[in-house]
Image (tube, rainbow, N blue to C red):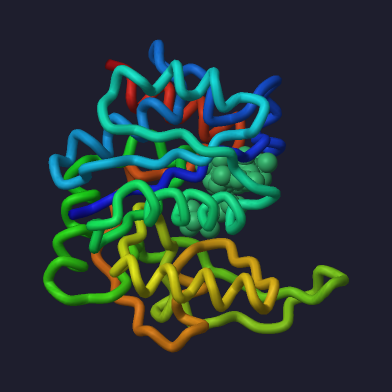
Length: 226
Ligand SMILES: Nc1ccn([C@@H]2O[C@H](COP(=O)(O)OP(=O)(O)OP(=O)(O)O)[C@@H](O)[C@H]2O)c(=O)n1
Ligand SMILES: C[C@](O)(CO)[C@H](O)COP(=O)(O)O
């Protein structure tokens, strides 16, 4: 059985919204509702645990209650903490879950086919799977003065999306290790890499774009108009 965790407790500072980014409405629904609906539409996700901003937990619960088997728990100080809290709730409430997906509320229009593709790769035996896209810009490393240090080969680079899928015990171990060393990471696979488990890739999808800035929101509004 597959359970999905949706970190949705961010403030959305780069978007500049008045309230939490996950509650910003697009085409009549908050972003988090689009994200949850997409996960459940894939047909392979049995339960979704959403990490909400503490002050907005009741509001988010009300917004998501119509979508199916969804629990809303309080989030943490950063994305890593929010995912960890959702993972602990999932282990408690869905003890027979073998696969866990972690999916940003901010990737609200992720196609259900991508959710299935990640889940199927884990079900086929990979312990950790991320969807990736080739990098189309040249990427440079810079120092603290903004001076270029080097130019990694673009051929080796990939932009990583969500949902990221894991054998649930692997993600639990990765978060336990992160907790004991007070580690944070910008994605979940990064923590899994640190415990030495190989992370596999599947092709991502441009429609799984992350809504971070006002420009991203405008793009999503135009592209996903229904
Ligand atoms: N304490 C936090 C911070 C972030 N997130 C979630 O992690 C995902 C990816 O984070 P991001 O897109 O950076 O959202 P924000 O943290 O809200 O954005 P910003 O950094 O601009 O404030 C989002 O769905 C966000 O809600 C979370 O659950 N808990
Ligand atoms: C998890 C993620 O979406 C993978 O690309 C990304 O790292 C989240 O970053 P954010 O700055 O917390 O939005």
